[in-house]
Length: 286
Image (cartoon, rainbow, N blue to C red; front, side, top):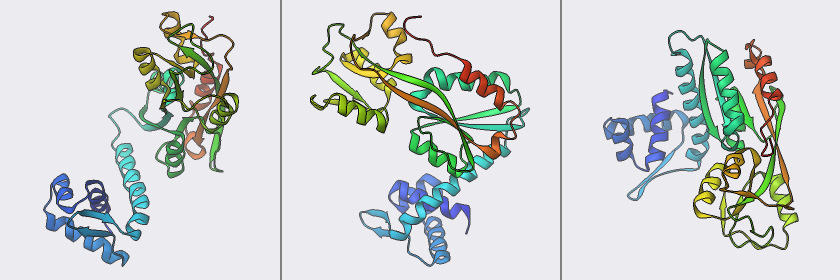
């Protein structure tokens, strides 16, 4: 099996046809067909259903797709690490939950960027499920996440606890039964606690799975939502948002999860972790 065969297989699935795959890869359609046939022959399985409506994976193709994606990603990472920029000897592959990038993620990145002179940094933004998969596959070395679970080859370090506060563009907005309430996903624990606390409330008309996107929308369009306190500091100071009095407050714990065999070779890691855990997150009252 050759890597080009796997990459061609993945491109066929992405593009939905052999013709478009050949255009994307800048090779002839006969080359795409030959690569696919070679892969199918080696696995003794038909991987692609070729129909007039397009190309779709067979059951065997679906099973192969996950492994093929991991292999292709690992190869891409290996190429990046081998081809480090001149003057750099190591690579830190840093994954971050999108909701943790503001303040905490940037703080971690800035420490590595300014302190570890010989390390290049690759940043991947994703959700907790993706970060866990990338860590397990070795695609990233460390992950800033809300998920505490780590496998035996990883270490989990608790970091800051996010306070989720109810804010609104209207200081007189009701705490309960606000027709302009926006639900912002913040993990399974928050979902359960929120549902129990607001069991008598209607389902929100609008919902987001990213706090920063929800904040941007709310500042423009109005409404109320539970958001991490650290990202609403400036909007509150600027009177764009108001924290609603007497509203329940929720919390969400963040973690740094690391592949142990990688961080054992980073002499700077302990100081970095101390720096990260010692920094207080600014609050609105300061």
